[in-house]
Image 1 (cartoon, helix red, strand yellow):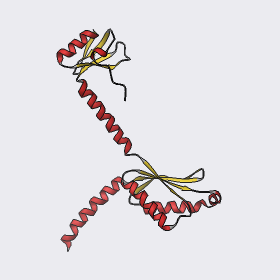
Image 2 (tube, one colour):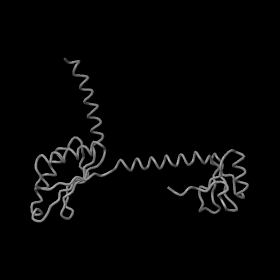
Image 3 (cartoon, one colour):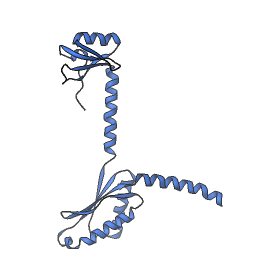
Image 4 (spheres, one colour):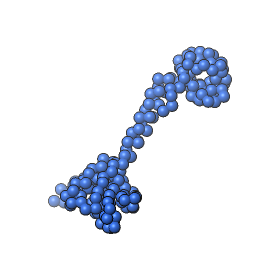
Length: 190
């Protein structure tokens, strides 16, 4: 967020372009006159565009303005959090139970609304048999079919094969709603 805008007596410029509380331009005034007009109307004079010639100042309730700005910043941060990418690393020769456990982690990440990056790490001679890793990634895709959508298909990045899964939110929501409706319909048919 930008630094706090200058308000009332913090504005040290000789002349400012004043804008009224309704957004209409009042004209260019000496700063002390614009501050007096704002105070007469019960508002603060806030510098909204300090780089303009002359700087633009608006008459507004400064406390309300700062509150709205903090709400905008908070909403932007909330939107950023929803797009986290969680990474789960696999090896080509993983035991079946370990594979199931890691698939459960991937499903949990997807159900929480996060994306999942799946990395298959190859070492040394394992690089010769990348098809084993590709088969495991296909198993993961099949296991997360109802929960995830393949966003980035499997591809080699150095000695790792990676893919990205995104949550299938619309499919999950409609699936739940459809399940509830079918449950209601079943007792009627019995």
